[in-house]
Amino acid sequence: SNKEEKIPQADDSAFLMDTLVQMRAHGENAEKAVEASMERIRELENLMSKTIETSDIYKLNNSPEMKIDINQESMKVLKKAVNYAEQTDGNFDPTIGALVELWGIGTKNPEVPSESEIKRALSNTGYQYLKLYDSSAEITRPGVKVDLGGIAKGFAAEEVKKVVENYGIEHAFVNLGGNVLVIGDKVDGTPWKIGIQDPRKDRGNVMAIVDAVDKTIVTSGNYERYFEKDGKIYHHIIDPKTGYPAENNLLSVSIISENSFDADALSTAVYVMGLKKGMKFIENMEDVNVMIITEDLDVYISSGLKDIVEIKDSDFNLIE
Ligand code: ADP
Ligand code: MG
Ligand code: MG
Image 1 (cartoon, protein in one colour):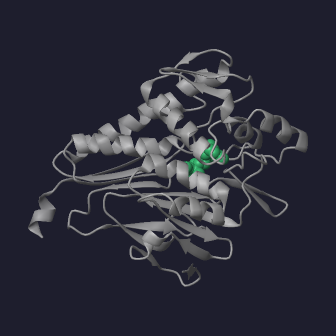
Image 2 (cartoon, protein in one colour):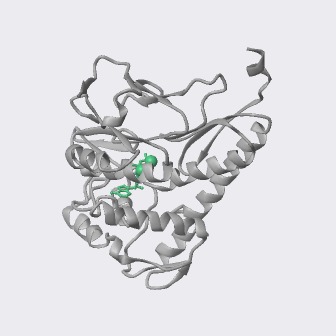
Image 3 (tube, rainbow, N blue to C red):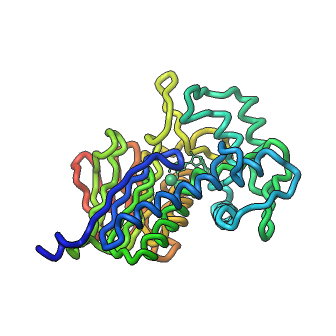
């Protein structure tokens, strides 16, 4: 209609937080809102990156046994991360950094470590070695490294939401490498249609569609970052109990809920927990849903998803 055509639209994409960020906003201030959002993500990356030497996390990781001043934003993420570590019995653990570095997944030279290397990195893993105070933090054991890769993008998505809402935007979406957040519905008043990535195929091939208004859909999968050695896939979600990539016969876990910050932690946590424990954990939470895809292409959904998800590919079997 004419009304739709008059609403300005802005699109942008950038490589931030180690991933492709894509964004769209509709509204009078769409252009400014998108620009400010990208800037905000860049700020957060500068605070929480493991590799940027001025970041809170870099300083924390490289000055063990010292109280390090931490910015408010990083502190929120650290606190939420430790909270989920406690709630998930350590299946989600922000001190996974030593193991992530050892495996090098996503770097140019990933390698299967030796047993003794795994043992050593495991001894340097455990959120009990991360002490949080009001505006400072301390790593109490040298060798322990914080890695917020499993939660920081969800926080960033929520910050984008604040930014665009401050610009009066009512219709927008942001996708931070599989962390999708939609604001409002589409301009034409219908829900956003969010695709769930087909874990077997190239990016953009979807196996299901979820109708979404003011929702987040966050996927953790074994296909995002991995390497192959002797016919075996080694991916980037590590089981903090074994030191190896979590082996649960899962291809992906998607959390569908209202809050991307929580959803990001949960998608990673459920992936580590596996089908049974993970499904039970989510069914006990209010307003949080999950879709789990197994290696057999069986699709398990929590009860709240029955009416809003549509499987598009008959290779997948919805288990009810
Ligand atoms: P993606 O990075 O593709 O969004 P996730 O949100 O599942 O996927 O996060 C995976 C990242 O989280 C890893 O690259 C690593 O930085 C970190 N990580 C790996 N295993 C764990 C774990 N058990 N608990 C917390 N963070 C983890
Ligand atoms: Mg993620
Ligand atoms: Mg995550």
